[in-house]
Image: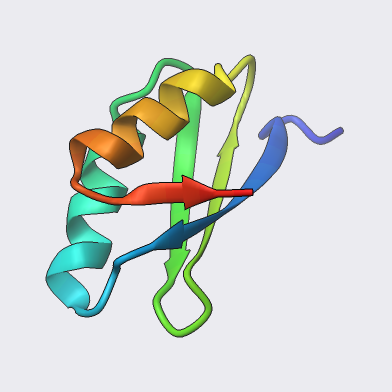
Length: 71
């Protein structure tokens, strides 16, 4: 583990444009402990960096943005 914490990866469905990426990034960035969010639109992958990040809170933030995390 580095000083920037760990990285969690999720696959998110429903994102189709840059606005989708911005919405997910904004909502997930507000989760406690998150230090960075990278969204890859073509694959639907969302990488979340941080320390002590609550995975359920990330899933809820993605839902708040209007999208869904899939297993």
